[in-house]
Length: 407
Image (tube, rainbow, N blue to C red; front, side):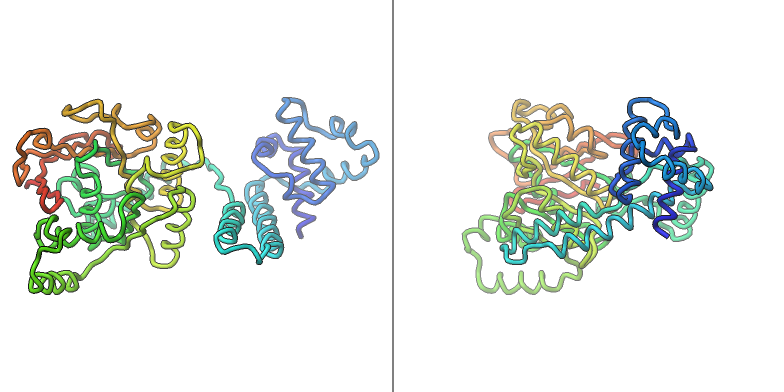
């Protein structure tokens, strides 16, 4: 079956102009030995804009004239060329993953073994082919989805953020989106990321990935958020035992929860591997990462490093149908000015990859004497692929490191 399939595909490359357009995107290793040599030559001819036909192939295979002619004799159609190539890719990658696993050195340490398995997994992924689809078919699909949402009374396109106005303007957390929360130091970007986890977990499965803060530090913020006990009392253990008991009851009675990854490894690709495992085990809808510039992609140049991280997170979101919320540092140069997209630190790639960019802004932060409750704070929607850019009035309570919408 495999030989018959290969012979028709190679024949299609010789006989069909349409099939020839597929040559640059295939791997000659999908084919058996002689067929692989023929396909490799045809790829080079195509890339050199030279004609592909029996008479242009004969000089490369002078002792194989009969075999070349057999391709054209056995060729029957190019109608299923995409499907045929997909079948060949699947068969090749299935064979390769089995061979790679058999050849693994099982005596290496656990971390090295995990890395090798992840490489095998990445290399075994079947490539996605772009397809030409009639617009009428796409419109029909969208209308069907709209009908289902209307019937269910669900006006949101994505998952609820837990924030009324944010849902209104960005349509909730949308699958495949990269959302960037940018802030200057001290503005409370970690607080906002935790707020979204706490208020969004009743509607979706969340994971908070901390590259900067420990699990214990995050837990103290969570305690302050729910109990309305000042941060300093929790840090310094200046509460009564009765207060601790009341807080415990309150927290353990919470119906919803989210997961936390305190990542000692800041490599973006290793973090993505952990998240893929989390998705496979427990399901995953939204990831909050604190924060983007603390991650590493193995690039020496800082701007290049941030660009690779940003693109990797966007691709991860899109390929896995989840929302990635990446916290990001802004340049300090703006001082007390309102943040803008050009303030995103290290890379314009972040702005390009992001579907939504949010800036928490607290004018009171720059006052010599800060109020306990900052009622003039804002959440600025600086970029929004789903609708308008606007400012959402919010309140920041510093003693609880807590953001809330001002409704």
